[in-house]
Length: 159
Image (cartoon, rainbow, N blue to C red):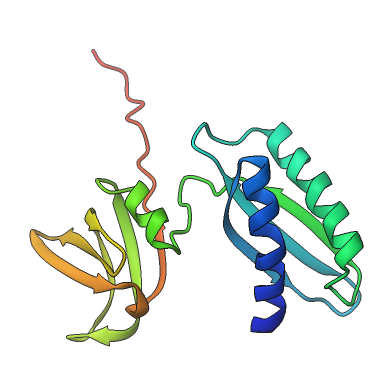
């Protein structure tokens, strides 16, 4: 997808979702020969239910019908971000300080591009992670992608 179309879709989605009480976590667009796929990942502090996805789908679909930014046929899908949610804005990182995160850099630093560790700080400029007992600072501009590392509950029975 061109950066222009992605930007336009985000510009349309974010204000609408904000008015509805949701946050746009991510937006994916997969063009196809005859049919494209548009996916919105939404969240809110109370979490997301199926009804939330249906509401956002109805409202955003109506806006897309009026604005018509996508030149081909497409399917709109709305989902929660999941347990391994994407982190792409400083506010996303700040919300999950104390959690385990995976960060992949745009370019290697000391021969390493991937870091997994505890997120200990997130401000407007950078994050700090604790990786194997070492503090690692990373500016947002150096991050290619980042996500939460799912923490699965211990379901073993206690004896």
